Amino acid sequence: MVHESLPFETNHIKPMSLGELERGGKRMADEYEKVVLDGANIIHNDTGIEKKDNEGNQITQIRPERLEGAISHCEELGWPTIAFLKTGTYLWAKDLADSDSPYMGDLDILERLIRDRKVVLISVKKEDIYWIDFALKENAIIVTHDKFKEELDKYPEKDWKDIEARTLRGHQFISDKFILPGLMKKKSIQETPPDFVPFSKFEQLREEVEELQQMVRELMPNNQTNLEILQAVTNQALSNGKRAGTAHFHRIVGSAILGLDLSTYPKSWPKGWSKTLSKKLGFKGKFYEELIKQSSKKICVTTKKGTKEIFYC
Image 1 (cartoon, one colour):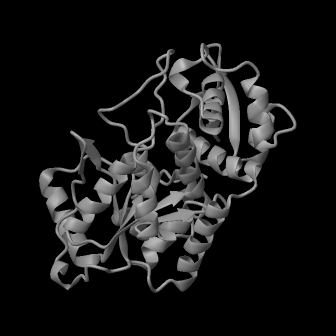
Image 2 (cartoon, rainbow, N blue to C red):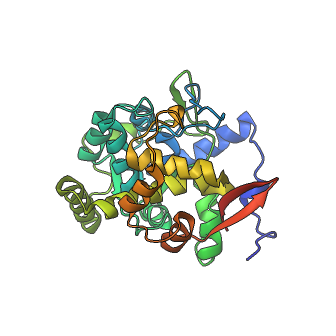
Image 3 (tube, rainbow, N blue to C red):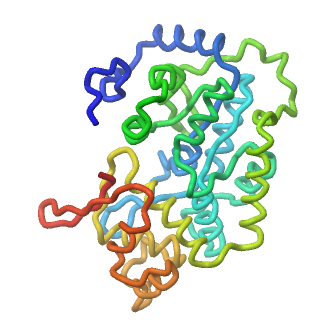
């Protein structure tokens, strides 16, 4: 489906001037009540602290400190704030922490944010539209770098003009400080209770959060836990039109599931790691055939300049 004529098509977004940002920020401060963060965008942000493997590929990191900083920034401006994160990302973080990975920040911060209900874990079965719908119900600003292309195609009946109007995409980290142009101080800051729970009206959602956390505590079957991690890794590697070389992606998954250090490949990786990986994932056939079958989004494989790549198609 093509949407070239839509006035809110994100391909045509141009950088706003300071004046436009200020006017937009004042409008948002008047119209919206809360802030909803795309947790994956922020927790994987490694600006200024990038790490690369021996082939020059960037290594994905998980930095709860940055997610905490983003939430605190919005709260200091008076905005009740909640971040959504896939359960697989949390499980991935636990595995990294258990293996003392240099690419994992402070897991205690993430677990505290979950306990405080500032981070909500979403099952792999829930699509991204789930937290977008939550933002609409809560009359919230959406903070993400996602352009929602897949959701736009899949859910054309949604009010995408409204969604685009409430979305801020300019966030970044400068010297480890979260910056979000366009988010101004909330006008009703003095009326916001300090212990405000932004989703208290949603009893069903609260119950789901508690159920998910209990499920993690009791440990899911190993292959299901690993499939949740696989989904989180895949989304991080391929979302927003990104592509990954098949060999590199295979190693990314191996690192996440088996607790191996990407920067030491192949020297310190055990022989037969790929077979061990497939076994842990419950894969019976070839890795990419099984990956394509179990993925919630369509994955394609192509060859570019002699190198095989995978991408969402």
